[in-house]
Length: 113
Length: 114
Image (cartoon, rainbow over all chains, first blue to last red):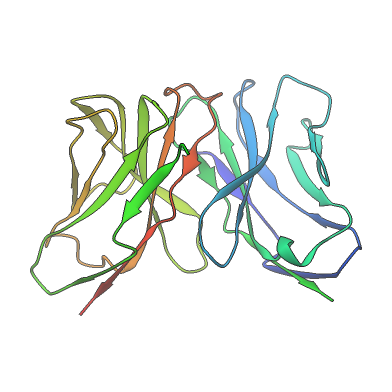
């Protein structure tokens, strides 16, 4: 079974600071994809960033970047210059040979003024 | 604007009643999914569909049923056999069923039992 672990249930960061959210996963597959989704208070899941396992280069999307360590099975999300609108639940998800996304339990991020 | 719509936003179910959650997409996606989210949990897959008139059970399909009569629509019925239906339900779609395809989500429906 594939598992995704997010070890930080809650985090907080001050506006304009940088924060890193952790995610580890377990798989025996070699070809897979990793995602970070954001769920704001509206509860709609929004894709933040995705990473292909065969690519060594870490994905970036504006203020969001990942640190993908394939050997360690680690996929952390870094948010730079945090904004109040970044306040949300963040879910790490994993897709391989199955058709479902395997989700972690989420990290609740609070950005404070 | 292309996107996924879900209705209603809130739904109340009485004991022994079947209820249907609507999901519509205009993204021209072939694959559609239903997930369930419980407090403090990630999402779990209920059903998915690759094409019209075809769908498969996910990890927690018991007590649920679906249909896929049109490419744009993938309604989910929560039957009376589902003993703990209170949850947040999310519909998603992707271009196809490939693992490389990003899934895009609707705004969700919250189901409560009276």
